[in-house]
Amino acid sequence: MSNKIIGIMGAIPEEINGVVSLLTNKKEHKIGKRTYYTGDLNNQNVVVVYSRIGKVAAATTVSTLILEFKITELIFTGVAGGIHSSLKIGDIVLGKSLIQHDMNAQPLFPAYEIPLLGKSYFDADTDKLELARQAILELLEQQHLHKVISDKDLKKFNIHQPQLHIGLIGSGDLFFSTNAQKEKLQANIKDVLCVEMEGAAVAQVCYEFGIPFTIIRTISDQADDHSTVDFQSFIEKISNVYSIEIIKNIIK
Image (tube, rainbow, N blue to C red; front, side, top):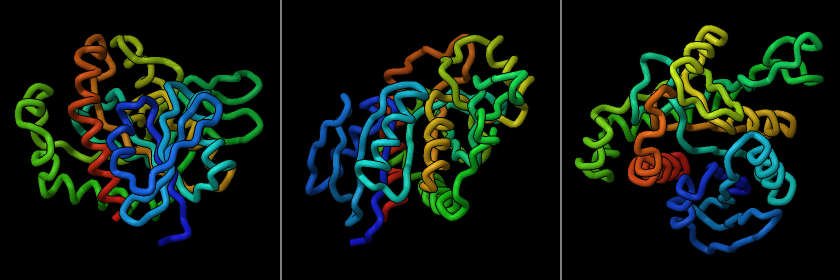
């Protein structure tokens, strides 16, 4: 068994329950209103936990993974709202870099820069990024997701040929639910592919502790006036399955 310990996070129970069910030698550890599940996945030591929603919750949880469970790398999986016009519901975004789109300490510091850290963007480890890219493309090219998700559920969300996108993810304590929010962000940060509420906070903590991270997001909506339609159903029927299959394929 490898000496590395992989932390696996999602924001809500539905994003990690399927992964928890895969563990052997599973044990529960309750710390600070979180339940951390340790065990083995494909002969690999892992710790799985849901953080709850938002940057503070995510940063607290990943800090515990690093300090208490001594993880050596981190995988975060969950959903996101699509910002770039090329993204469709069911597509997958792999974070090459992450930014906190709601960080603004001007005029003391430039917009989006983390005060006293001198960074706005947090870049993923290139080797881990490539490993995740290959694992996801293998699933997509073999149409594996069509084998584990019913045609009825795929049709419900108009998912036909999911695509992988690699680039910038924006994080902030704000759920995007209007066209105006989306257009404002596009004007300010032109390269952002999607938005969510945890990834860049996780990336910042991992950066400060020297822990490589992988942020994987499934597009659940278009971050516009229709963002809340069937959100819960999408997580249960689609993104939960994505998370299970992608993580299984990364940790072979």
